[in-house]
Length: 261
Image 1: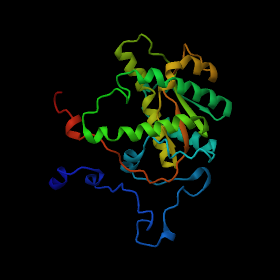
Image 2: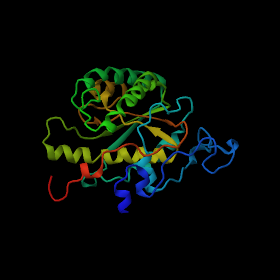
Image 3: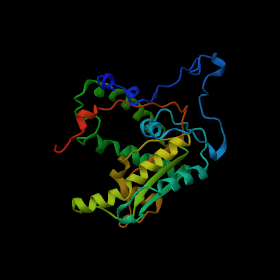
Image 4: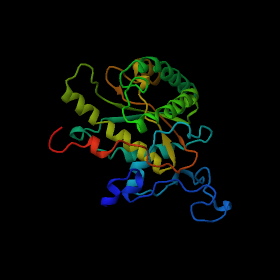
């Protein structure tokens, strides 16, 4: 274990998340045994059977590898929501809701709202255009992410489904405690939805920039804006291949604080 402490990468976790060799299928066989580019079509019951650690470390924000041409059965999305409902919520309130959009006209409207949200986002200090990435390896990942964002922006309307998680409270003008309670009652279920989707061969991308025009999106979806708050917009599609791997993350020693900051 000590030898691994000076190394970087997912191999040190004891798990190998590297994608298989596309020519050999990862087992030394000929190219005929290569892993298929998409999971076999087994209907709504597809399961990747990932371990807990694999699921948690390989669920990515997927943009370029979303298969916009493959339909997604509504039963699969409903099953992901069923799993997501098991996430914790403040006071066991169970106030997280999911609006699923598959109608092309509504998806086009939401995609337009999302694209218009890019300008106000780009002015924020935490936007990828403005945030200071001090770690060189971290900074090196940003141009690639920018290119994938452009791809999603151009194709968002083509996603087979969009899922808009909501919560039946608003945080406008609330103090930090109430905000934490409300966000804490919905965000765990949103991430659980993404994890459940990954296990079923689906990709998602957690986005929030449409919230710059949240009220307009509420009108499109018939959401009572003054009572219900949207928290994200997730494009949902099967992925082109399922061999995702752990991404670069800052060292644990840089983000873990023991006993005090």
